[in-house]
Structure formats: C-alpha cells, structure tokens
Length: 203
Image 1 (cartoon, rainbow, N blue to C red):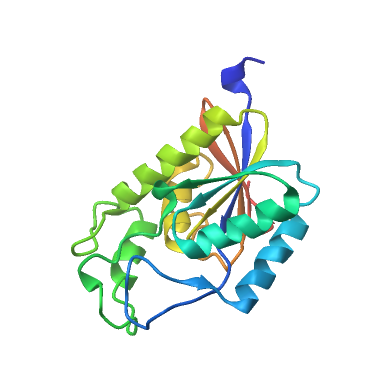
Image 2: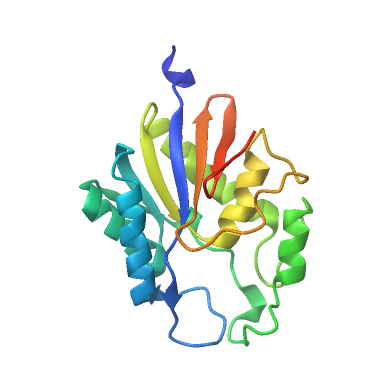
C-alpha cells in the first residue's frame, strides 16, 4: 500500500462541558466546568487502548483544556489549530443566547444550504473549508496512525457530514453531538468515511 493510501484514523471529539464568563454571546471564552474536566478524564480513559499518536485541538480554551487533559493521560503531544474553532457568532456578539439566534442558519447548514451566512460571520462553506484544511493536514502528517481531534459541536456537525463520502443530508448523523462525544473517521487519498457517530456504527 502506498503512503498516499495509508489511512489515518481520526477520533473527532467535542470539548467537555464549559462555564462561561458571561451569558452574552462571544467568539472567545469558556473554561471547563468540574463536570467538563471529569468528562475529559473519562474520554482519556476510554481512549487508553486506542494507540493515540497525538492530540490536535481548537484554539478556544475549553477545547485546549479538554485536549490537554487527554494528552497528559495518554502521554502524547498537543497541537493547536485555529481552523477547528466553533463558528463565529458574527453580529450577534454581546447579545443574549436565548432565543438561539443561530438556529435557522445552522438548520440550513445541516440541510446542505452551506451558502447561508450568520450575519457578520461565516457561511457553512467557510466553516467546512477551514475544518477540512486542518483534517487534511492531520491526515498527511499522521498516515497510518490514530489522532484525537478536539473541536466544537457546531463546527463538527457542519463539517463532517459534508466531508464524508458515506454520509449525506438524509443520514441521521450530524444533528447533535454531546460534550466529549466522539465521531470516528478514516481518511486517505480518496477522502473521508465516518465509521461511528457517538458509538453508533455508520454504514
């Protein structure tokens, strides 16, 4: 098998539960709550037999903290990538979180209408493109190995179903992802395949 066909196995996880400095929307902020730290430790324990070679995480603190807890337990290094951040809150920065101002746009993304844009923020296509760039970087660097990628619910649910060749909008995956929930992906020169979504096999 050529190096280009040697698949990488990615375990793409949402960060642990977080506490936030304010109830108002912002692109930054959020640190792991005590529960989030326990969730991250449990994630590390669940991955103990997976031969994880490295952890790659979003630059947001709640994701970095999740990745660092897992990496310390597994004895591997951590790399931070901006492209794994959650989608931008755009013009909604400083506003209340209830009612959810992103629901209509996010539902459009999940339905495949990726040109829809959060006012002052990103389109779904832009979210998919930046996540894809990081996943491709990881694939090329860690061929034949397993890597934990820590990101965010919105970014993962938008990007992964649009990147995987065995999933489309009619498939029941991609609609939700709990804290420290894991999506298992295989990636090679032919693209990405989802193997499991939070423990459920994907055909």
